[in-house]
Length: 109
Length: 117
Image (cartoon, rainbow over all chains, first blue to last red):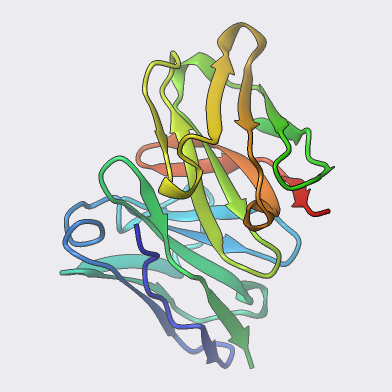
């Protein structure tokens, strides 16, 4: 049950697009279309933004999109805004357990 | 609005026990799987355990198997996590979350468990 691999940090200027990767194996990310993404602001609970690889949660901006290729899932934020600065976590089904990524800090320059 | 409110976090000595609870409201609790997720200070999220709608099927991360027990009381709209033989590495904020379409769509605000002598 190893954690999924995410970059420790990414950054972008307002209006730019940023992509966060989430790499697993054929027993988690590659084996199921059950990847979800969560946004967490400091001191707050996580918030679901993407489920089942590419479906946006209710009320989430269409600037957020998800995709998957092989054992790697990706979260893309188009036209990044200051309010997007947060930690982002991917999560995948891995049989009985679920596994999270280590988290990525998004900095808006 | 769906609400999940955790309680029971505290400072406990290594080897001790603690029972967390999560009170659910504004949705039909008995229709959903429920999950516990934890976050150590300054660290990432870690899935801990989940339970089916009636409490028959339960799953745990390897690091807590045999020490933690997840349970629920649908009559009280409550989720529980009994934690025994606590270790320093169990120190974390513990969140309860509702499972929905292979994701966790609502989260509580979390309760802090500190294991230290």
